[in-house]
Image (spheres, rainbow, N blue to C red):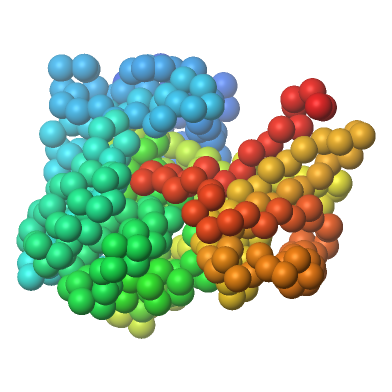
Length: 426
């Protein structure tokens, strides 16, 4: 599809969505009126930037059903965020929304190479989290045989991979590496499995981790992007060329903004992703600020598709740590650690405040016992890691090396960062 044709579709659907939220969602009507905007103000896609942003705080303040644009009797399913930082964000779907969602996740998995010949094993948790159900129905529509194992019970996951001939693994990237680790302990030769594609999401991960996953699991590791507030998985995903996530632009408009000023940036400039839904009935969103940092590329892909692509997200504005005036993203630390031989793909970042100064501590797990002895060898290895981190972060890091198998493994989203600066010293 040409960009002109796509933008005609986007404008028609944007006008429909703006009218829908103005007439059916008091929160949006109030915001629009305070900004001096009426639905008829939207005459071009450029007018989108005049609409107010929607934040996660707006969603939480309207908990649970305040942002629904249809009566509750038309809602056939709800999902919700975990709510670990406050009230959960509740999202709803009409029957037509679920059909659209299924189409978009089917489109996404097809991008990655999934066909009706595949056996797809889902190791995402099923429940209020959108990942499990979202991928499940999309994979079925793509014709794959779906194995809905859910998360955890890694030995059973591996048994089913062997017995069912699993070709596609769906999980968080960190859990896929734990599967590889358990397989090695069980004496299972990964190359004997039929795995060929990994559909990973749910947490940021670096290109270095991608290489590690592909090396250990013998798969094409693709990233998919989605968030409950916008729809769930299916918003964007990588094709087999792994050169950016194809965005479902006929269903979502994406902008990048300066996270500090809110100014809209040109395609190609790095900024915070902002999404507006175009076809959702139950829970449309207008200019939702994701806090995810990326950039947009509107050039056609090698695969022939013409939809814009977003660079793989490796950081969030709320993940950024400010240590003694220096901005530090966890992804920077991961990218360094994953290039050092002898280190496992598990780490923890602790932030403390001691004597009124911020201190960054990184716990690193080694994968070879021989690195612990003699002590002088361990000291040299530790100094080498600290030097590598300093060269990227420009700050000194307190490093702690721990034994193999020490750091927690998770079947869900890996918790990497712990900020203790608000706690009393002690």
